Length: 316
Ligand SMILES: NC(=O)c1ccc[n+]([C@@H]2O[C@H](COP(=O)([O-])OP(=O)(O)OC[C@H]3O[C@@H](n4cnc5c(N)ncnc54)[C@H](OP(=O)(O)O)[C@@H]3O)[C@@H](O)[C@H]2O)c1
Image (tube, rainbow, N blue to C red; front, side):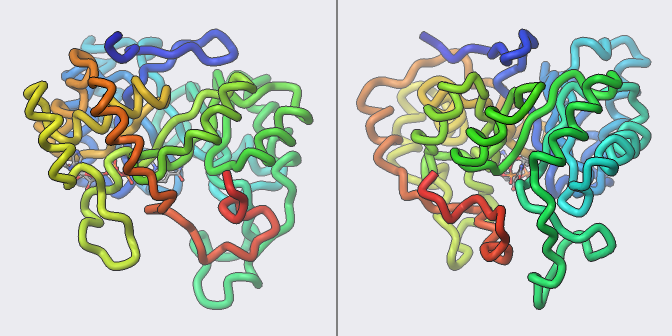
């Protein structure tokens, strides 16, 4: 069967299985990228306050709503709470700041960006002796603020990002409103099969970031070679008249059961990344892509490995 275009979240809301990523999309470029994506058919946009471009994303969305191209209720906008604002009382005000930046009345999904917290008055991205900026706030406290945001109608759904299995389990057992997704890195180099199964068993959908292995990191020492540069993947693509990026996105959606959010500011690549629903990989293609798994991360966030809630020390 070809890849599903939507997946149902545990609260009944449908999520498009492909969305546009916006991290490192420069304010001067992201507006055009989002407008192009809406014209191409994207309805799902992945954003975060730390990306520093919510205002430009919002400009593009509002322009497309005003011109009648799309209705607000057809769009699914995700944003994320940054690590310095994990105290319960900070969650709703931070979400309201994001809404103001987007110039929107509500979000579709608000995520806790990382399970670990930084001190509120410290830097957003600690460097040097990072431990002095760590905060011990428990993500279960943060979650109470997230639940409040749902009650106030500021977001339709809430979820988490970069949580490991034990953290997901602890959260699911101690919440009133269940997380709908766990957004984690997912690509053939890090296929996350164990974490995906664990999340699916708890009705938590996995959204996969860096699905293309963050292709601009090709050749960068210490980072895995993105699978879209693998000659065998290109060969698989030729069979279907598809690019390597299309093969990888199709595999992640259809064979791993994960929602993808590739980032691009190039209209031709935004279109390319959307045209992944009209082919089905053969068993041997899937076996090859499965064999690419190396458990290597593009985003290890290893600077924070000593934090009490750092998530990547666990096996999954
Ligand atoms: N929750 C988290 O902690 C977290 C962490 C990282 C990322 N994310 C989210 O996930 C999104 C995607 O991850 P990512 O941006 O790091 O990596 P990615 O989507 O794997 O890769 C993006 C890179 O690939 C290029 N690209 C796009 N389409 C391509 C294609 N068809 N062929 C070749 N290259 C292509 C882009 O360049 P051009 O723009 O020049 O096309 C960009 O350099 C982010 O934008 C963000 O929204 C979340």
